[in-house]
Image (cartoon, rainbow, N blue to C red):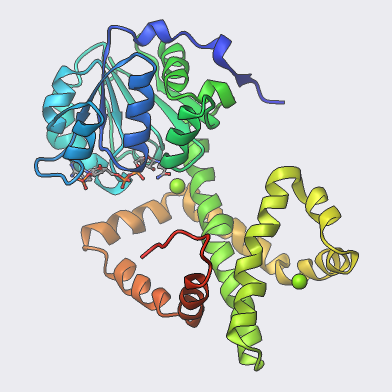
Length: 332
Ligand code: NDP
Ligand code: MG
Ligand code: MG
């Protein structure tokens, strides 16, 4: 079993007295910055002038400045900007202040792994990647816990990069939950594969295909919505709590028999072959290249597909049904 690191393995003192600049105050930025501050560390926030998030960061007690100013002041620079903007901001505002002995930190390996950011050799470069959305990084910390995280070292100029990564992980609360070591390559490729094949791409197409099949056969869209989307959460919760076996123990034997005999016809050998091809395109950089070009062209495909997907019938019926679920938060 891979080694897990916990509180006892990490020394927060390594970061005391250093200035940590958190660039960006979005999902991860607001969470990591506040956790680090509440862990007694010195954190400043780098944002672009006029950012709507400036006031929120100031209200939380942070000094907010431009990315360039924050990079200049900091010893440790954590880049929590959208992945597709990181290299531009790095080249324009951070690079010139990344002087010998500083550390550059990421929560996702995309830009380092695909060569979009190439730091000088005399700085530490490491990753601390919480395996959770930002709001949970914050909420679990305030509850005295934390979310699991991955750490990785790309460059160890100081000889202390891994210790620093563990200290940072402790600062955001992750050594309470457990920290695993990986590499930038492994983290980047598995993260992209997971979201494409299983979590986002695979799951959303599976749900839509099931919904469409029922509706095209004449069943009510409301029923199809509950069967194919709503109940998925309940099933995934069971897997999350106790794996496939606990899920199968909890559903009926009829459901379990159907699961085990029919599932392989849905995710079949052809699907598995396609997953391998998807993984190859991630590994050889074809996906990264397509996504970077898409951004350079101002996202024509991304925007068109977002509109088309938002108009799928499951979104219409879902909106009405969720409107009646008083326990759900509204998401416009
Ligand atoms: P968000 O999109 O939530 O936040 C981005 C932040 O960057 C905002 O504060 C935005 O501020 C700021 N920003 C955007 N463009 C610029 C710019 N040109 N100059 C200065 N600031 C800018 O990002 P995430 O927190 O989702 O992602 C950050 C990193 O964390 C990524 O590497 C991502 O892969 C990683 N990650 C994210 C997870 C998540 O759950 N979201 C989970 C694990 C890792 P404004 O627009 O107000 O200017
Ligand atoms: Mg991802
Ligand atoms: Mg059922």
